[in-house]
Length: 252
Image (cartoon, rainbow, N blue to C red; front, side):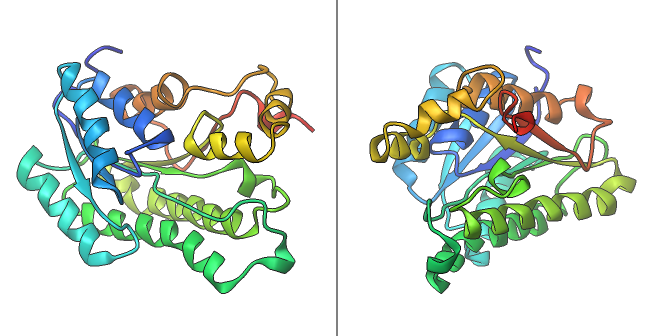
């Protein structure tokens, strides 16, 4: 797919690390100019530097996705510096893991829902710029939401809301030829590292719960799928949830 995204501009939230970073690298590898957006500018700058070192074009932008004014400023700066917005990837999200429903607090919900609001804010801010036929929106969901994993109530609720937003947007934007899809990934990330340190049995159990017997790569597995969906080849796919999880979804 070399060069499949040449001339296109992508905004990727939460791209300083983990899944967002992997998607940013994969889209840049296919020729997209990338706005690397996240709360911590230093992390975003590191991702942008890797893209630049490989011959790509990237800018780093600090943004709290839960604050509409910062989202609008990030989109405006992307348009001014990179010439537009063709692709939006709503990835930024955080939550307190392994929390039973009985212990979920208002603070837990506020943290988890920030990603949901961010997806809406970025979509609204990007709408005037997304081009017909080549405009692409990807939201990052989670198998924790689709199958209802114990201990992830706040996270699952927020991720299912983001997935619902993608389906509604797919209907509303279809007449413009803009596609909107959701990816539910299972790949290496800082969150995975945290769980590995907290509970050494957690990741091996996840691996055993996949058909392919491994945890995916955020760049080569999740990122490659994102690049396909954002390319012309993915132009007839919309309103879908794509599980990039090594078969976790089908394991009982």
